[in-house]
Image (cartoon, rainbow, N blue to C red; front, side, top):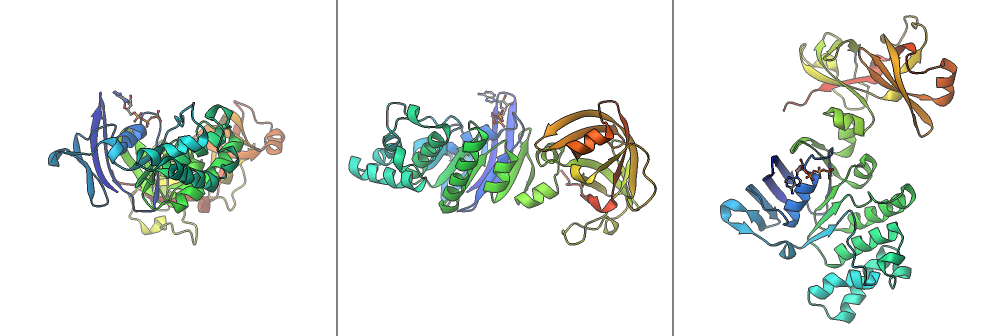
Length: 364
Ligand SMILES: Nc1ncnc2c1ncn2[C@@H]1O[C@H](COP(=O)(O)OP(=O)(O)OP(=O)(O)O)[C@@H](O)[C@H]1O
């Protein structure tokens, strides 16, 4: 799929280029209102482009300049909506058989296709159940089976796991992963969930305010977030600044000595010219908290701060520390108790230079 999208809705404009290869899954991430749903609607044919083009293989689906617009039902797009939209009065089997029947298959043949898809997703035993008799996870997989049974050329998934609790989400994620691995066409997955994006997609596209702010392999995006939103998504502190010798002068105040970690492919900040704009990414688990100023030693970065808030995150405590720079720090609960941390506690933070990863700031 190859798209150059330019579309406006009310005061909102979405402008983004998109290439997804056959068999590839692209996850589209972004904060509320970034334009993710708008993008899916354009691809599904529910919204027409103002300018640009949308092509699937050799076929043009939408191109205002060429006066081409292919109707949604003729695009061969399989869509899985957030709320599944199953027909409540039909069994799982007949929900899935709907597409093949509409495409002209006889009832028995369509049901055979449906049974095969249901079986593949582990839903054989509930084929005769109506949607109301299915668990959330099963309903989600029926919706996926329904989309796949129509042999789509393009698969569009709109937050497919968002309505599920953590347990069925994990099961459905596995089923989705298998289905995506077998799907021969391009697939697009809109999600808010970084774990979903990181585990299901070959490539990520991050949208903010209708524009692409970052695109790349999940591991690269997670390691080198380009914006605050992406950094928060992958759980890192991110500081924009300017390189000055071996230090980075941070835009928000303070300085950090940063270094590339051997072997992880980051460019050594020393190799960048002075004055370069860089981003410094810091893992919250790499920052240490002390009540007294630590003695000069191997950590090259030491600075004072004040605890602003504490949050329980799984088996760790995330401590939000105000300072220059501010930092999110992950500690164990016993460490927090031992240090007696609470909002307002003055602390010292330390960070090894090797844990402050600097990389060139993307030019936009
Ligand atoms: N029917 C509409 N008419 C006018 N503006 C709209 C319409 N639907 C959405 N918008 C606007 O378009 C922008 C993008 O919305 P969109 O639903 O694509 O974002 P999103 O990234 O999917 O957000 P969310 O994560 O909240 O679903 C928003 O500013 C929204 O207010």
